[in-house]
Amino acid sequence: MRTSNPALSDEAFNVSRPVSASQAMTINGTVNKTGILVCVLWVAAIITWEKTFAAGNPAELYPWMIGGSIGGFIIAMITVFKKTVAPYTAPLYAVVEGLVLGVISAFFEMQYPGIVFQAVLLTFGVLFALLFAYKTGVIKATENFKLGVAAATGGIFFVYLLSMILGFFGVSIPLIHESGVIGIGFSLFVVVIAALNLVLDFDFIENGAARGAPKYLEWYAAFGLLVTLVWLYIELLRLLSKLRSR
Image (cartoon, rainbow, N blue to C red; front, top):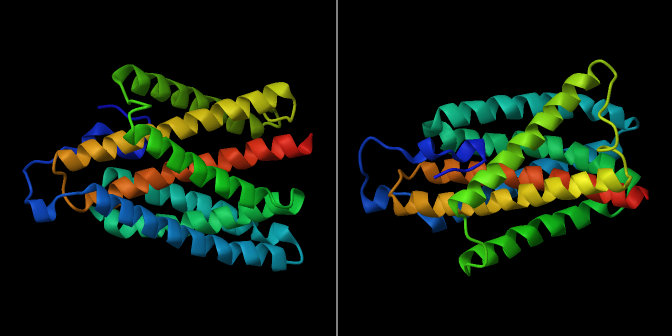
């Protein structure tokens, strides 16, 4: 079973011994914990959102964004490599990531009023639309589908990594970050791939529950799904900002 979400790799549900039904992971349990993480992220985001708008110089909030990004990455790595701590690190990740998203969202909102509301609606709209399509069998996570999405996600990661490295030298990859046709097309492609990662997450969580994974992996699976949702939301903000700038 493959997934392009690094937090939900197949090894995540490999356990040395079976667990009882009462101690096993369930889909409902994962859904509930995902809801908790989203709420925690939302509350944290409101804090830095209000701080950004209240600040005389919004740049004062950059430390929140940079520090939160680094902290979120560290917490995510700990969670991925030490899955048993997910019940503690997943909520902490939601808090840190929420603080970062609050600043980012406020910056976008200052430039394009109303864009955050649109991005939030689209994020949850895509989530529920793909969940419906997955549950009704319209979209099936076949092996070829998984490989294709994984390859595309890896390619996007490489482009972003290259863009970040080049940025240190004052060089940017032309066109893809601009609001032209190519830039919008690239952002649309990334949004589609981010959305399709949700299908892989649904499939993996369903299979993990069917295999009787330990209860703590509900938090781990919810964490992995949150990672995808955050990525999708940010990419939607980028796409909408390019469309609005035209």
